[in-house]
Amino acid sequence: MEAIETIQTTNPTDLIVLGIWAALFIFLAFKFIQAICLVPTQSAYVVERLGKYKCTLEAGFHVLLPFIDRVAFIQDLKEETIDVPPQECFSKDEVNVEVDGVIYMQVVDSFKASYGITDYRFAAMQLAQTTTRSIIGTLDLDRTFEERDIISAKVVDVLDKAGEAWGIRVHRYEIKNITPPATVKNAMELQVNAERERRAILAKSLGDKASRINRSEGLKMEMVNISEGEKQRRINSAEGKAAEIIAIAQATGDSIKKIAAAIEQPGGAHALEMQLSEQYLNQMDGLSQENRKIIVPANVLDFEQWLKTVNSSIK
Image (cartoon, rainbow, N blue to C red; front, side, top):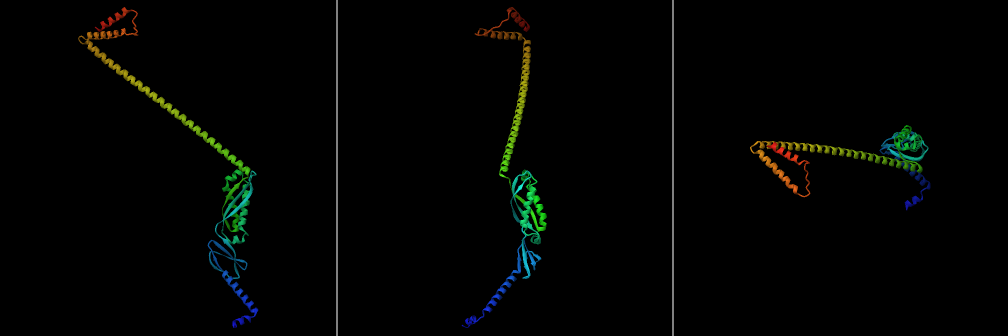
């Protein structure tokens, strides 16, 4: 009852003052807690003291002065990518193409990135677009597809020079798409198809040429081999015939020598005469056969005289 009576008798002004002191205590506690900074790895906190740059906090534990120091900027030091939206560009041959890309960059100086420019990401994107437009304006449409690396290198060079004042480093710039108008795209497809057909026809003709050359070389070698074989066959046949003739001549010579030796023996001439007579009679037996044609000399007496001469020479 006494506690209730004490609350009821408390002055409302005292309650307001108590609330103000409680809020002030909470605010002070919040400020002291906020003065404790835990900076993560690959991050940098830019600290201002009374609105003026004081220092840059690296990764680790740091304590600031409440009400005097404050973290004005937080910079991420990791490499990041920025998409460059598609934009229309005119090539040297006045063809309208749409180009987009991506930038890979990193903050290397937190102070410059915080105070050197309002928004370095937006600035890098805008500079990449304007540089790409100016470079493509100096190239024909066909070369824009072939020289992407050159375009990217020039954009990186321009961004690097500007990035020195912004505290950033541009590692690379890649063009994702170069999109020509539909009519130009169709014409390019027709040109590519025509080039492919030309290459196919050329490859086919070269293959046919090589095939014909190989076939003719094969026929040539075949004819040479056949002629060489025929030549060798004829040489072998001639050598065989020569050997045959020599063998027959040698055998004939040997037989004649043997006959001559036999004739010189006693009774040899008579035996030879009888053998010739026997052969003559055997030949005469065939004259009686049908369809047998007989050729006799015009003067039979001369033939008989020749036989007698042969018989006398034998004797």
